Image: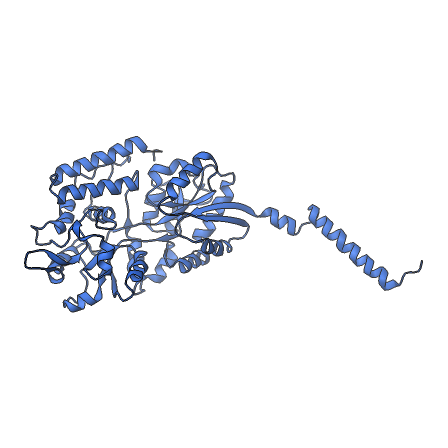
Length: 431
C-alpha cells in the first residue's frame, strides 16, 4: 500500500523518539534517570531553621535530595537521641557547640583528607576548634553561624540619665551602676541599672554570663584531660564579683531574683542594661517595638580591652555515626558551611552572623553586627559534659551565694563536685 513520504518520515521520527526514551528509561544511555539516581538522599534535622530556609539553601548544593525536619528546642535533643537509639535518626543534624563531651559517640567525624585542622583554622574562629575539634585532630561538626554575648542597653535611659556611652570595661561598668539605677526611700531598687548578679531564675543566660566572667579572669574550668571540673581553684573572685550585683549590702547592688525575668524587665524599660546574644534582639523588639536598643561589646577587665575574651553560643552541623552515606553527608556539610556564597545565603536568610572568617571580616565595621563579628574572633567556651545540667548547677551556685544559704567558697566547691560527678557518669568519649 502506498504511503506518502511525509507520513513515513513522521512515523520514523516518532519511532526514534520512542526508542530514545525507552533506552533513557532503562538507563542504557545517560540522561534524566541517571541524574535522579546520582542524587544522594539525606535526612536533615534542626531546631531554629524553617524548612523553607533549609530547602532554599540546600538547593545550592547539587547532587542531593534533602528531607528536612524542624523540631522544638525544648524536645529536640531527646527526640534526636531516641531516634538515634532506635536506628532511625537523621543523616545530618544540628549540633550545639556545647554538646561534644556528651554526644561525640553519636557522630561520624570528617576525615582529615576532606578537611584538615589547618583548613579548619583558616575557615573559622578559634572557638570552633575548641568546641568541635578539642584534640586538634578529629573534627566532629562545622558551624553555619556564630553568636556571642554582648552588652545590650536602653539608649533612651542612657540619654535621660546623662550617660553618653556604654561602659567598655568592668571598672566603668561599676561606675555606671549608681548613675542608672533608681532606689526608693526604703532602699528598694525600683529600676535596675543592669540585669546581672541573679540566678537562672531571673537572669536569662546566667550560667553563660558567669562562665564568661570566669574565663576573662583566666579560670581553668576543667582539667587538661577533661576528666574533672577545676573552676573552684581560681573561680572565687569572679563568683564574688558576679554576685555583688545582687547583694543589697554592696555599692554595686542593682538586681534581685525577685525582679522577675531579665528579658521582660529590659523590654519594658525597667532595666537599663542586660547581657545576651544577637538572636534576642528581634525577640525584644517584638515585646516592645519602641525599644531603642544599643549594642556594645561585652565589658572586659580594665586594661585587658586589647585582648578581649568573649563567650560563644552557636550550632554546628554533624553527621550521624549510623548514616549509610557518611562521605556524601560530609561533602554536603562541607559545601554548606565553607562555600562563601552558600554560607552567605544562609546568613542572609536567617539574619545571623556567618561563621566563616571571610564573611565575618566583611561585617567588622557594621554598626550592629560589628560588635558580634569582632567578638566572634575572640570567643571562647569550655567543655560542658551536659550543658543543661551545668546551667542548673551554676544557677544553684549563684542562688546559694546571694541568699546566704552557703558561703561562696563552699558553694563553689559543691558546684565543682557536681560537675565532676556528671563528667564521671556521663562522659561518652575521651579526647
